[in-house]
Length: 232
Image (cartoon, rainbow, N blue to C red; front, side, top):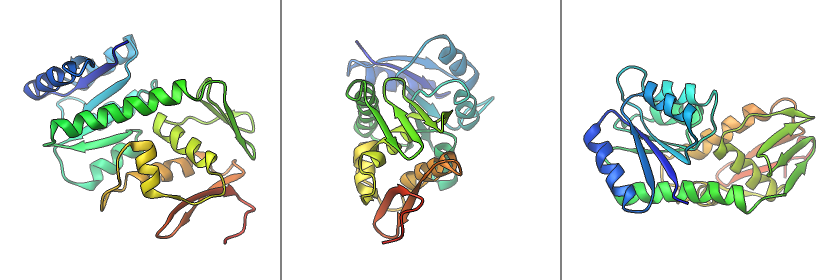
């Protein structure tokens, strides 16, 4: 079954090119030229991925994302013409799964799109009937639900995958490059703070009720451990 992608971008020429390019790769696309329309479409049907521009009239991409996350966990790839790190970081903090600055090479866009679709499909298909537990935290891969002491923890799809990967490697060091390749589908590049922001979001959502914590190993990566685990 063809994947369903929604392009939300007021640049009709670029949006049309993206639609044509992705359609040629057997990815079904629909278009919305403003945030309000995009949100309306998302409430009417499920999509596998949203390509969301930041700079739009009316409500911009960041506000659109903020409202989208109130009712949907659909993966979001932010598209931005701005070079400032602030927009990228804020987008990730609001629940974006990745970002791609404009102008971009269409092959890179396709690689990002396929990587996101592939990892979410894997999360849905390959981990069926699995349950991961550590301390008072439970991840149910049947429902993609996370609970701490029975209370639900709302995570984005990417945050969920970061937590699952850290749980699979519980107690062991996981490098940033390993996380980037495994979860984001690409090698980490200099000054890319995507991993840091996703981990920061996870920490905020797990504290203070969780028995677990994500420790930063300076210059190396992260370890998921119980709070009683001493520094090594």
